[in-house]
Length: 327
Ligand code: ASP
Image (tube, helix red, strand yellow):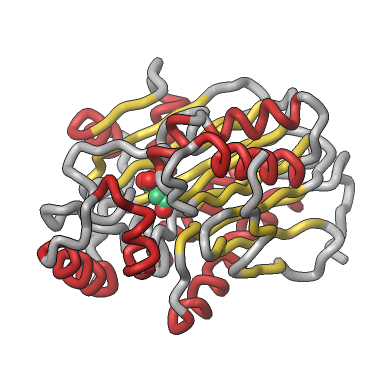
């Protein structure tokens, strides 16, 4: 049991390293990465730090890891570039920040926080966003890793054989599960003061068109936090999360009295019900205001971890509650 010292409440953090398919040879690094992120985020909370700081630090760890599709190791666009995006939200104030189309900012989540705190805007992309990063002295890093270059080559071969028709993702997922190496990262936390926060960061969907924005930087779609109910971070096919405003939908379920676990399960059922040609590729994590955690997916895997005062070290897994049913 971790010492809670003079903390008012019992903090908790949940992180994810993405839905999709985690290949066995990479599962160890994925699990180690989410565990480390949960540990770092929880350390912030146990010292009395805010949920906002905790999710930023946890996501920052995963952006630096190289195992995930965020920060260093981001997935490549169809024209072999990286366009990263991230968002962060504070449940106490409903302040939010997001950045997109980033080429070489080392930690997109830190830029999202700067957009939130140092500008009057919520979402800034491209050169304008990179300029903010430069003004505030954020570090740069080439995000292109050998791992993702290898994936890109294989995915392009699939595409060139005529087997990567984007609107047919369902068939594609069956034939080529490696394409669904989604591996976006996210975190939700409840701090000892009773505030929640959420953050999400990604390189986006592999082989995406240049300029495509997914759910991860969109407040309400990939990320949402509100002290009146809880916080949520999504992973999976961004176009699904956007169409169902999924992270906010999870928070709305919690606002109506569902626990975090029931809320994420219901939201995955909603995906299974409302999205035709279900791509079977969504994952959700959440925390409610009582500190209950939730994790569910319809994707093959969800790489995730959590840490609370009841545990001596974070628990990590490549699966959570897998939901195949409809509403
Ligand atoms: N949601 C991300 C996107 O569509 C991908 C992921 O979760 O891995 O950009």
